[in-house]
Length: 515
Image (cartoon, rainbow, N blue to C red; front, side, top):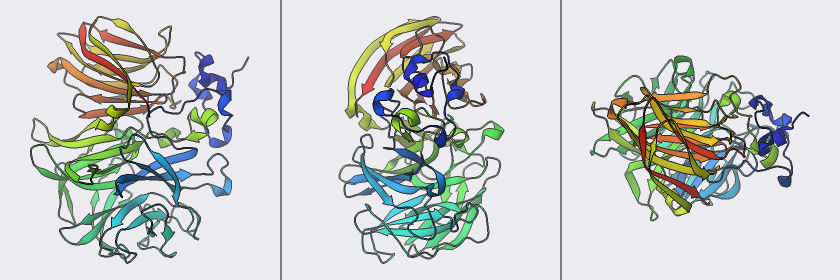
């Protein structure tokens, strides 16, 4: 009997090929909730229905974060109504979110749908819509194509809940180039003006404005070799040693040269016009396959106080190579999951360079529903634990005298044939989804790597597992791997492993969350 896709992802199709996953929204319409088990994430942000992709930088308004994201309410039907709006969710702790519906609609002007951009709070009424108005600068493509991109302005006078267009003319017209999108706007208080970073193929262009309505080009930062640059990011952060750095980030595709296709960044200096990097090659905020369109944003206390030594970050847990491939379409009627919100800090490496370290947001601690403390576990070969689960966090510190590799088999099948492997091997840390169902039917993007120095003979691992994702934080979060994976819901086992030696998994703790 040929198994349906619904049966496959309910877990009754053990050993079936991942190629049966849907490859387009038209191939899979949502079923009734009772017809199949849910693949909706337990503690990660997911769109309520239909489709989401790029996160938009959250902004702090009236004591809570306003998180906007690209949303297509017509994803499952497609046709002429395809295209994105900005949907809004609000949160006080960035773990639990409240849906607020569409904030910036699509197709309300002749310019069509709205793409990525950024929102700012115009505290001093520089744009003339009132003190505290929320202004969105956003890319649109007049005429409905994709080759002519310009920047438009929307504004809100109700605290960022609903927006109106500021006419139908662009505030930043296209100068005659194909890629001209994703405006990221920050306030340069020192010089009393707004600064925009704009993605222009292999360049990030910089622009100035006094009123958010009229923009002047002042220069750019060029980087070839990592694909078309998208979703730029620009911010200042203070390191743990007191050093102040500017960071320029982009979503980029370095797969062709053996690099990630996630968030590339440079530390350096910025004088309001020119960004000067500390090194020509970027570092990467994530080494997995699925952390794209990521944004960083301000960390604020409950009273609104800004923390200049940290920022938050969130990324789209997907990849344009297989964006429509997910089991959530059939049973849950949506396609769109985000990474956990992480806190990033600037740290100094032993060589004197600086890098961004990541850790899951501390507010996760307030949502722990169960803790299993396994203590210290000695492992030589494979050790199956007396634990089953599909959504959890596991932390440990692995120590050894001599071995080749060590780590976890996550979402392990009863017979041990299917699992996701995460850990270290030789001189790299890795996350491998090859032995489970996953979205990459090409087989090219199955195992991600990041550098690792095994001479230390110890590694700290913190791994977040949810129904369709794994995020691994290595040591102090110097390296992170975020990837989609779609294990059968009957695959609930967890095992430890070592290769060519014995290791002790110290202070091993499993936590489950309720959101």
